[in-house]
Length: 77
Image 1 (spheres, rainbow, N blue to C red):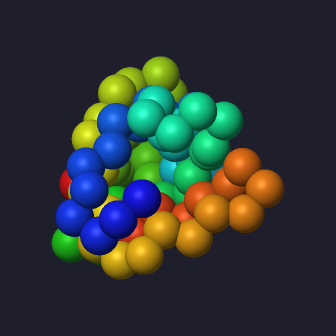
Image 2: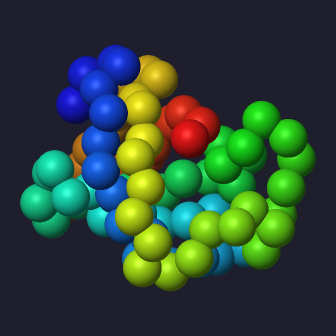
């Protein structure tokens, strides 16, 4: 993944600290979107409007670090 690349992802789980999304364009990779990266405004995951199974696009704002099929997804939708 490169900076500025837009990824398709589906929400797999909602946690208090963030959201796990499966990257559709990178098979087998699930990424964490920390709750502070969900919105420019302070919101909880519950207030974010994200739902399990929902599809989203995500633009990578910095280098994507992957390790063992896991990724950290910096950036805001």
